[in-house]
Length: 211
Image (cartoon, rainbow, N blue to C red; front, side, top):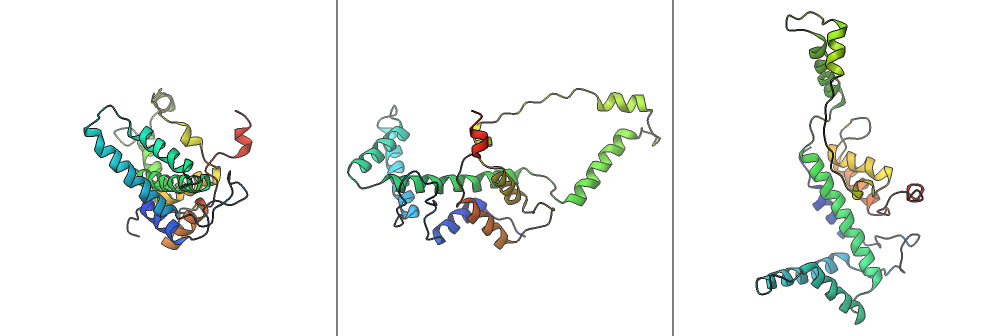
């Protein structure tokens, strides 16, 4: 399968999905079924581009604050409602999941399970065998594998801001394989995307109760 831009595919699928992205069961506001999130995104993006272009005249201005003020005024004048914003946030969040899948895919190595097993076996063989091809003494091997290796991991709350199922789906999108390591089709990828944008973008409640 040729490489697929998951983010673009996510937005394309959301454009085709005419039902509200947010189920009424967990929406914070009454669902507005007439919302066109694609059009709203374009309008606000155009506003943001206009605000940013004005930064040359006022370099101390904050484009995000200005856009937030613009959105507030739209709400005050009833040109925008909270349901529309909620649906837009869902759309952008799903788009970001697609972007995360693309980024993860860009630095992933081999995803074939059998090939990975072979690579791991070869790595272990190198640790076991000496330069002359004979097996190392256990003490020497034990010393090698017990060496401390230090590293640092930089992460943030978005890492934990999704359900276990979404993490699994993200891995499938990035690797283009299912849980058994088998390649998934484009239709299966679309099915995963549809499931994601009908899913609440937050950790499972059983984890939230711990904070």
